[in-house]
Image (cartoon, rainbow, N blue to C red):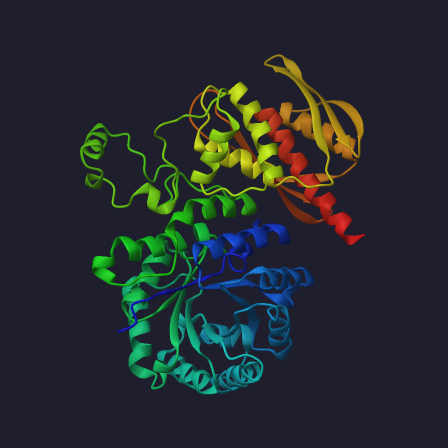
Length: 508
């Protein structure tokens, strides 16, 4: 094929957010959308507008702020869905609607209870209806990889006639294998007469761990758009990982001969941002952006890398934005200029006010740690960035525990200028701490998940705590990082509560 460019369609904000427990706030979605635009993502699927007012408003907010990326909304083959998408993406400079309808026999028989002729009619009518208001239309035959081939070819031909400009071929349940999925794409190219009028897209799930492999097989066989998510998040086992697909094409340009518009140096930053917003920790062995992706412990490997990096590394860490661990210079004697210079090198852009606040926190951290790593700065900035304006603030925390004594904490919080203190006990210091915070805030908080990880190496490493909570039936994720894990646990819990309080204030 002459077209050597692969479009990247990101669905982190839609399919990615559908992962259980990955609910994101409107503010976090917009922040991720900005990150995706910095990456150079061609199309951003911002949500499913008809699903809720919150999702509609979030899609509209993204559409209002983005300048370069095309903003897309998802719709079933129903007029009210299509109307909702059109209205939500109206402020965007570049717009697309993504219409889907199931086509596999199992879906037709058990979910839709319709014949193939009825499905074709629904698909064509929905595309024609959308075409009256927008000319950038993507159509997805849901569960395409398990759809009868002759019917798949038929419905694709008809929706293209009706005005679809992109046809997406979803492996909705991650059932396909690379050879099989590639053959589906090749079959479409050879058996749909008008396929040359549109772009073929892939959308592969990772239920068998083949999402990226299937996507690349689709590209190899003629697809020129890949639908994916940052860190591969999504329903069940997730989606094809954007960073893996893009770096696969870039690293093996000799094989594929294809490129993307992605600025790969933004991957590390985008990965961390999505991890923070979703509450899903990136596994250390995650390809491209995992903590161990560019680390070597084997003596043979270390010797090889020191002599020639390419012996055991096929990508440069800098190419995906992974900060270098060499030449550590920041510590308690480092000045404001050095701090700002390091932030710039990491690609972190802050206002003067935020820089001043971050520098104060950096100095506090430097007093506790002998060496401040780039990862520490990321955690510090991210922790600062997720503070809310109307918030409970942790003023003081005293914790006592031991093998033969009941854990006891004394917590002092400040809210609207007033300080209150509560003493509590529990099964452990964290449990005691959370009971005290609930008592002070007079909120019933259900802790759904708690995780802690070390941001860097060493006994003085920052402990980064992420909590998933349910408050008044809604999910809120809180996070914080300090060298004291009990303090980090308390701040993460308070962070989740503050998000709830901020939402309540918006409703008033």
